[in-house]
Length: 182
Image 1 (cartoon, helix red, strand yellow):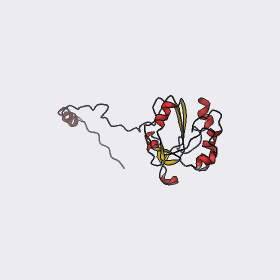
Image 2: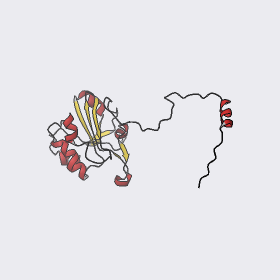
Image 3: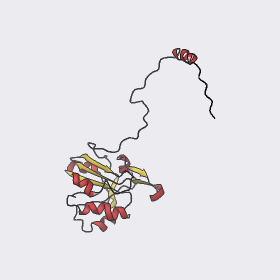
Image 4: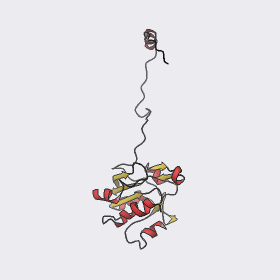
């Protein structure tokens, strides 16, 4: 049971009037409780060579490539060879007529390499973290993983971003949803 007693606040009011004036913090120094926003339209891609293609020695900087390539499509997946990734997410892009840009997994999905799809590894998660698209997948995957996403890049800048709200589902980032708007 709670007991409440109401008393006048005169002693508090007089104590406050004797205090030094409050100094306001600048907005840059203010405390923020909201999470930083992941990569968004208009942003450039992270300038890092953390991604690898085919072998660890073949590093790729997608920010540099995005400057040279007119259009680029990046597909992020939490687990290669998982049913959602191998049967639904990536094949949807590989078979979509608008797809132009994306060692073992790549060979399995595009053995001849004629669909214009490239497969990159992000072994340290540096690229994924720079996009702010990593999540703690310890319970399912054993460590940090990439959220499932699709990013359309044009002329070196992000045009659109589709990130699965539950990190691993297949709804907003599917080819028919992303490429239908390209």
